[in-house]
Image 1 (spheres, rainbow, N blue to C red):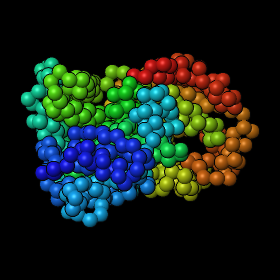
Image 2 (image 1 turned 135 degrees about the horizontal axis):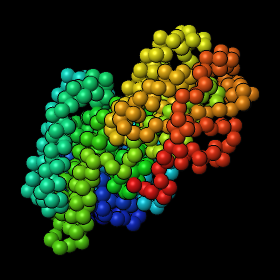
Image 3 (image 1 turned 180 degrees about the vertical axis):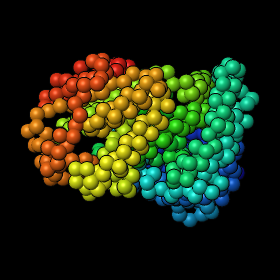
Image 4 (image 1 turned 30 degrees about the vertical axis):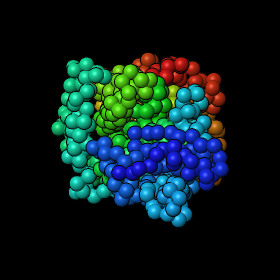
Length: 527
């Protein structure tokens, strides 16, 4: 066990930094803030899910923390510094003396730039959420994927973590929620595992189980200028860090829910799904949100146990535990969202993707895009060019039929999770449009087709501009007339299912009618 005194640690840091210090205590660390520096020392604790009771274990954890966090944090983690006992008995950061412990040295980040501070101040913007989603998508793409046969890749590994949570909270879960609610949470998570072993296996087989972050919360995400910095991943256990990428993203979406921003949590999921072509995450995301909320409730419950009875610290921890456990329950009962199917249709160059992108943020809903789906099925990057003429090559009618099959499969996964979905495609035939409407009818949810229109000269000008740079769409001016001739006029839909949008007008001029027609997220409602 370490004989460190946290106040002695503060003095050692002050001797080096020559700046004022502040001590922050977490359930596993002492953190000293001093000027532009941070020094973090692991506590000699055994919490069941981690054991830092030996100096060797703490040293390994410090080295792992620096190495693993450099994946998402640029220049924040500077290294590990030995804590030594000098001959005069004083504690020092480095230098001569017997090494008694280790400290992680970090660059101090501006607290006001954390996503948690931004959301609390009402300043976390859609552009921030998009940037976070892209950062996580890139991170997961670079991370090591576990083979499907690995012990940590399947449903049994998840079950171990879930049952451990239940065992560690068995003694006092009913202090925070009713016995009936506690049993409902346990039943939901266990039933999901029992009924979806094949789904977990498929996720692993498709490379979705990776060496992730494991503790992806708003307080660990910083927006510095145009860059996203993420710190404090799980370093002490592969079991908690390796997992489905959906578990990472669900953690952050759950934390946005916790902060009253269900809308932003859903937009995060939507942008991540688009960036990764992983719409199947919607089949597991609510389970993982419930699981992650339960984990946070467990940690808060541990804090309440450790605090002095009746203290402010105990009251705060108890309230946090209560809220997290209730969030674990509500994640299995999605009721705020209003599922529907919105099809965005029209000629090439008419602005469908611009309208669909607006709807993502108006409805807090994902877009399943036919162009992106086609590229993914061909193994191409979203902005790579797919060879083919009007109806040849990658745009052969047979392959296009397969693309639409996959588009509707993806949309069905989203819809089955109780969420709205937007489908961005030409929908140039009555048969294609009927499939979109049938998808909605089978689910018993509203359907609306937004037909984007613009004068030919506007479409051709947009296509000419598109040809000068990378684009998700391969539509070009030379195929415009052929495409236009193939488009079957939309006459088969009822008036309440069909909205015509003139896209040569500024979107601001048509936004109100568009949002009203498709059921946009109510203005002013956070969730």
